Length: 113
Length: 115
Image 1 (cartoon, rainbow over the protein chains, first blue to last red):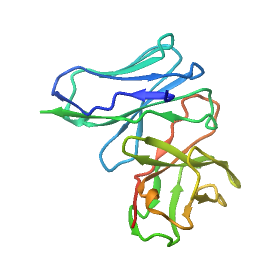
Image 2: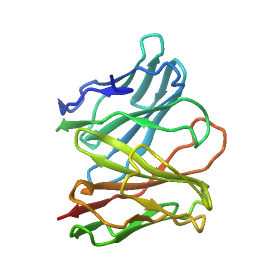
Image 3: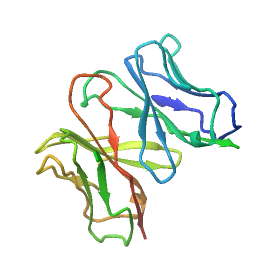
Image 4: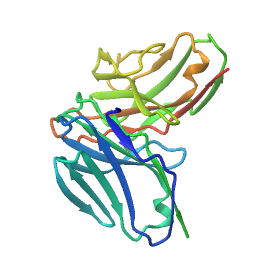
């Protein structure tokens, strides 16, 4: 079983839809959870970060972590065509840059006008 | 503008011809890393560096070399490229504070094709 599993997609939704992106993981030592967004022909950029279990909201985006189920989600409300990108979940065990970041494979989202 | 730059952005080469992909950051970050991104495999770490003259292997280091002689630069060297190194390469940097959310800043990517 891979350490981090992410739905492969792709995913296509109409503008205004609520989008749910999910990752599961097997390593209970993961404590820090991130979502990166990658536009076509660009490098990934950090979108959301959560420590341990709980929710975090930033505008139309909500990150949710359920450590008991080893499951993380990113919700996008009122999705826009500008949200069309590849979304990668990432997680690591401890604070500090020397803690390896493990990525999911990414899911490509397309929001249709 | 704070950024990570990579050169070249696109490269087509032949098997065995040594090449270097440069990476430079202007944010005074201690940590730098190289990843490759392949369809169905996601982002995998090749090498990383915690500071000048300190480098270590990631998950897929075979066939690659790196050096960190200056804080801002972290070149990736392929001494004898092979077709299985055809991939999209990203350089990233971050500070090394103990905050768990020390964001990694990624460069724009280098698409390498080895014939």
